[in-house]
Picture 1 (spheres, helix red, strand yellow):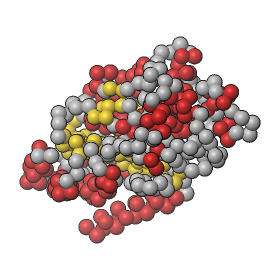
Picture 2 (cartoon, one colour; picture 1 turned 45 degrees about the vertical axis):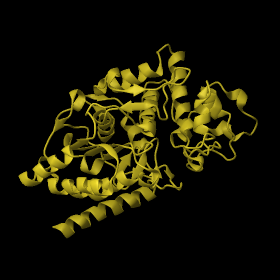
Picture 3 (cartoon, helix red, strand yellow; picture 1 turned 180 degrees about the horizontal axis):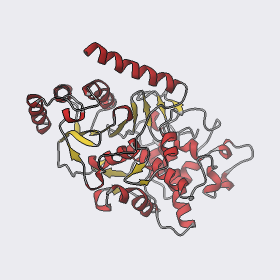
Picture 4 (cartoon, one colour; picture 1 turned 180 degrees about the vertical axis):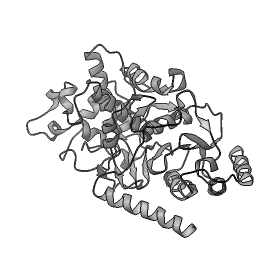
Length: 389
């Protein structure tokens, strides 16, 4: 059984890699649910959801042995919490840093579906009334919303190369400005957009500025109002449940400004697991979800995290995930109907540790699509390890 199980896992991973190499994701999403966690998540033993308590207990031992500084770990299968550990209060808000980008991507999809933006192929400079910054034959005239979402905007932007301890980092320079979007649009562009991935937090801020402008043009309030009414309220997340920083102009910081509870982060993952559907509503168009988690560009940057990048999401053979500074993750694993959330304070050399935990510790604990025989001894051990987290 063990050899057969390992062979099946390898076969699934190989198939996913082959499909992703062709630039397409193969993730299947079902909209049906036994219940919706709008008012809160329900819990279950791992065995009730076809998972091994003993193997999950080994996962928590590994975390302790490696001395990984995780704040919280939340594992959900079939819509039920099967394991949850927190160093602090369960309702603590954690800064999710660049995992914010994945949520901004969802808001762009909603804005397009609501007609505030036309499509991901719209040109950026006219949308922000910055045509005056363009020169004849300028590569900037080719820049589209999709280039921003895939972080292939081609601006000179050495955010990763300089690192976050360098005051000359363009991210910090942007945040010292009043007009963040103006600063980004004025950066040089030495090649056409869409050619390669280059991590650029300014891209996501331009997206939020576009939503803001479209809202004001249509007398529909602020980006904060839009995020609350169109995304958070339907998910059962009130304004008191999160904190989202704003720019000096009052626009949401779409690149890294959001702080959330782990259980609410999991709702974002579950929304994408369900193809943008939530309790009878299509909050995010399924076509947008499909496109967002498709492998658009190969990642080649130093500090390799995943094989490909989508539209605001990192694409893995087993699924897709967000990623924030110091290890803030929302994992979505469609094949196994799972969502995994990690908040952490990891050192740069350990930033990919949660990916290994999912791949080598959580996924192997999935034994069956149906209920397993209860393992009371292992369940008690798992409970103790979660309390000692």
